[in-house]
Length: 612
Image: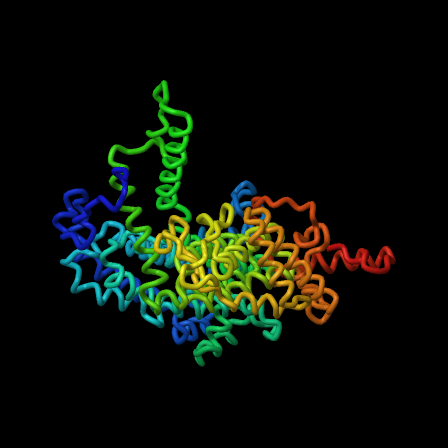
């Protein structure tokens, strides 16, 4: 073992530390007992403005309603990503668009309310994150204050009333910082009381946010941006409250856009919905060491292992090289980095185990939301979630408690995305196929793959007491090293695949035989692609073409031959970068309608008239 091996490290301070001890490095820390109560009062007060009964009163007033509106800057950033055109006050800017004819340069204070309140909210979340990152929140002197802290940051009305843009900052500025800063001995006492209600709320919020896009039976006005002309109607709905209010509230991202133009209003609504899910996936990735500082620790370990293998293969070096003095990302290592990385590595392993295996009220909503995110039509979120799914499989596949969740719910969503071939999935099919491969290898075939679903499937030998079962891997409780398998093969994934259109039991048996014969990553993914192509062809023959009532669904239209991975053997098995460009549903519908109008104008007949 190396000096950075957590197994031989002792961290006596990995727990509560007094404020006095913490103040040695930061003299600001002893002030927290006096500051934090005021911060909590600010958080509680400023977010009361978003509660339904308060919104109802404000929306009725023709001036006060703009305290709930987005700022001119937020409206501008909904459609622009830079200030090359002159910014908010330049040509094409949004100054004076939220409140007609009035902007923050005028003496009127109303246009400034939204910016002030937004800064106050963000600063409050940053302070909540700061008290966690400085470890003052976990100090013994703060123990009496912690119940009040939890009551404020997890209050049900507080969570429900946040707009998507506010909840995004809550996750990024506070929740992520809390998880990576919490000592591993205090997850149950300090992380769990916050994660339980927050994860349950996320499970409630996300489906309602995506309902206008995913629910074909949703009313047309659901998800429509709230403009000044509809403020009175929204005030009446807010007065009634309940699920009806929150369904409408989350569908439009919770924002009030004032009098901005229709294109900007829709872009703002879509942007905040999408950004919320992207930040959620980033937060989970960071806590599972799939990105950020913790991911660098694992990258350094992988680099050291490769270097050791090269030493064995090549013999001793004849000259000094700086390889051991730099991180995997090229940045120089600090003098104490070995000890710091060892602490992070211990937290990475402990937090992964805690999130998935120690508290059902945390793991349940977390896993269900992860699976739900695979079906939301945003390629960035979906690609990030596929990486999280691999870590979920590495941590839990060996546990029979997770078999139904992984072998039925997760596999069914992944398979549906592949066989339906929606346009928004184009470019990330290989990621999704790799998730299907990881599930089937671990739950059915008794094969383990490297972390992240990489590498060939390593076949486990049959169990000594039953040749139909498999021996467990040595890394079953070490997800960072590949995790484990289900030793008793499950029939749940088999039954799911056999129930797909065009598939029978013999075809599933042949799939398994082929995957046992070809265990390379490329070979197994090609086998799965060929298998799912049969399902896709069967669906197309039966008329399941991805559209509803013959109308164009934009991102949900079926990919054409050139875009389809299942039907295009020339598509490379390379994960390409996705250009980060916000595309709204109305843009996609407009493109489809323009294509159809052009086809009619040219009097073209047949399938070639649809230029997708």
